[in-house]
Length: 619
Ligand code: FES
Image (cartoon, rainbow, N blue to C red):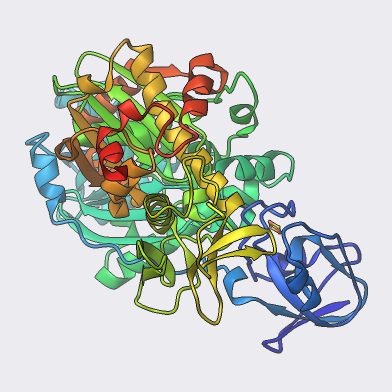
């Protein structure tokens, strides 16, 4: 049978196959935050004609159902049907996300290290060409020359040897031998070929960022990014792990992530006319699950108690094996992880923040799809992950969406009329609300008296913006052709996420016997960090009420750390050292965390003494 789309396209569906899956097979992807379980309510489509079977879903309103709206993952065609994909359910994963070039990268590197020491080293060698008298083999000739330079025990792979004879002759016996530490020969190149590049890659759960770096001077040639196309299989790490294990999708996920990295790299090198053979190393930074999937390792045990990753410290491997479109022999370095939910991206972050080098006690937070926290200085480091969930990325929120065009990113509510005014990314008609918009909206609703300290609507207030919706009471953040609302359930989800983040911070601080006063600096990393309004985040009790001047935004520290590791051997060692030094605290089994979490499920907190500036505002 066939599914006919409003665009005129017709795609096949097997008997018993749901529409989400049939669309996916034809390369049409919908927002599927829950990975097709029927719990997120995002994969909405409208059926125009045809017979189908669908399970009733609490995620759809009566009005939706009347209009013929169903969840694609829960709907099975029984003969040919005609379907319309709703605007908000379309997933455009191929979009490039505009990123500013970082002029400060070279400066950042220079503040750490003076000398560039890439993973691949080069040795200039001039070999005497063979003669009838000097007739040893090519490999013996190369080894003889190396020994004369004091280098013994160089290892040669079959791949190296298979092209060596031609390479030596092609370059007239004057070569650069490229090799990695531990003396493994990688490839041979002409001594005239001096251009050498590397890529630093952040494999985030939501986005993938690639920096192409000139290894001769450390300069950024270009940067590219895309949504992680694994979003098709679910928004958060757990859904991806489930897809890899129970859904037998490990290979699919691995292919998706390498395709994303390759498509960005291909575009950049084509633009700059760079030969991919000249990209001679890659550094990958990602959370533990993403690193495992990149390596093709089954992430199953990351998810289950006692939460054990297969590898924390990854050996070097070759780009050809990793399926990256760069020099096949190029070494690929993966940032080490610490535990199942504290990965190489956090090690990268700490490296870039320099907190492991400084004496001051710093708190590092990466608020993305998950929340990771680290505290410490040059002597000690503690870390934990709090499962804040992906609600700030839009998942689990009725009109939630990522911070892209059409997302409400800031909200103000008039104190007398309760009328909201919003600013929207791209200055267009809003299609949803993103994380910073949610934080703004909750803080404004709280301060204007629309919600109480428990996050419940104050039903006595008189305004049209507070109304009964399909899923209970809701506040209209934007009135238009499509109203954007926050429901009481949405507010509960946001409260849970902010409580988990705050509880993570306070549990970690208490575990080491400190108080918030001991924190001298707070580093905020992650894409979300760039748009976070500190004052608003404090009002809702997500961030601690400490002086604003202690906060620093660092942006994407995962890719910054990967960049530093691409350029310096010393910094790669520091990264390994950070991972070894970090003591991991498992919050999911901590009693203290549960207590802290319960206390943080209020606005801003049950203990108002912890939030003096908010108390003042309330008065
Ligand atoms: S409800 Fe269909 S993917 Fe979540």
